Image (cartoon, rainbow, N blue to C red; front, side):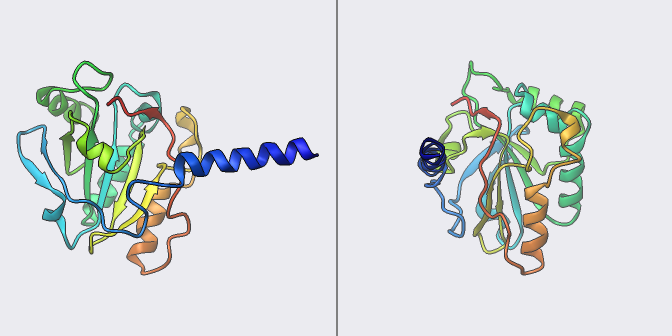
Length: 201
């Protein structure tokens, strides 16, 4: 019994050591940044003041990302939220030569091929923005409210797997956070543990 309790304590301690001190605490102002998208257009977070913004760290070669894109689930969520006025920014922080790195023309082709509905795909090859937000996995999701406050960060959903069949069974934390924030209600799970492949800085 003592061993079991000690194991639980160590697991909880590991969680807080690993995830308890996010670079940007939930409820604080989201750091501004400027990145260039796959068309060569610059975007700054401050450009979107007054709107909800989703940041999605992504890597097309990661099986956890593929889980959400293979049958169009992530694309459908992007479409639903952007049509509601949300700005959805995909961010690729893979360094040149690392898994997931894309040249601008490759990113443009992928957006078309996969039918993505994000507002833009931003290239963060230096990893500066990813490190500023402490983006750890692909996917790693952030929701910023119209006042520029980070109101959600963590996993895309509640089932940590690479099985596409789990998407429909899971609670989508991003959608739930957005709906609560839009309604002026407290967000039930404002910070969750991200899961996926490590960001390839």
